[in-house]
Length: 443
Image 1 (cartoon, helix red, strand yellow):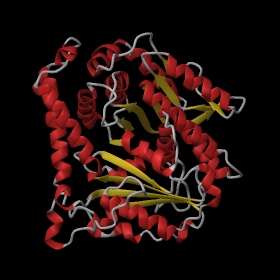
Image 2 (tube, one colour; image 1 turned 180 degrees about the vertical axis):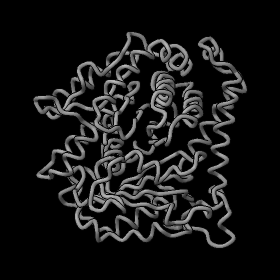
Image 3 (cartoon, rainbow, N blue to C red; image 1 turned 135 degrees about the vertical axis):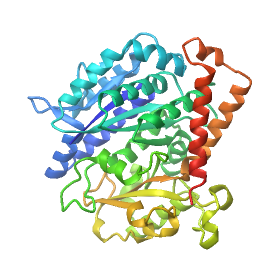
């Protein structure tokens, strides 16, 4: 089954390009016929000449990034984007969610829907749709939200996963907290699951784990692509009977987003080392999984600086919140293991009932996928996708800052002139505060 990816805005198109590049490189690495065929069918279709073309639609209100992505893909010599699978205009959304959602989205709806329809019809079987976007600017967040709404209307029974890039806390855009709040509030009603990467976390990975001195957006995007690819490439599920899973989005949603109140997913990967160090690094599954489990428990997004003092609360302490104990409680976790000796890896530590909410059994809350095929040149690679309290702090910070701006009516007129009312803001705040409350009270 195949996934159609919709890349939205500057960030969505740049991350999407890096994702397809790593997926293609990994699928074509070595003599791995079944794995390669499954991976290529999932993300690419072939021309009559056997060339791989990404199952993707590229959307931006300015043409520059789309042109760069298409040129870079063509130069790779391995894959390309469809020559007509893109849409752009000459004027952006001005970092204004309302401009993207109320103006650009509706104005270009027919053209975008037609591009997506063509890609869907190229699939023998559609696994679902993945929308990639940032939440800080205007096109990715505003147009991205509107396009997601259209996809939900047209494909009501298809799985929709939104991948969001969360802005730096120090700020890229003065109104990024408004844009983030409005995006998330709407997507919570539309999407089956929302997978979030925080720029601050990925930046630290680049600096502290990969030893990159001058970090570019390309470096950040490649880390995100590596983590996404490690989950989306073919793997064997517990009940797959030796066959690669057929519907990665459906299986991901089923494993992690079992309740409509809890849709936020975070991700961490072990190991992550500089490419020059890979040949000299050895990893064992017990060590990798020990580190990954403690990263989950202590809500540490990378191996550097793991807090080994945090332990799952026991007995009466189980009802204490994240802020009271420092412990990150999970609703559900998906562990994806790839590489050498993968079937010898012992994952029992992730089945501990103390890690999870009391109203879901560990047997239902924990799933694992495995593949003996190494991923992206790592001999062993483990990625944990978690529906937990991990995103509470950035979410709470965002809504708090947005409230402070809204209380002083800062920049509200810039949204009202495009059709968003103060009541729309209040509805958004209500939605996000309910999400924060629900995750805070997991026990």
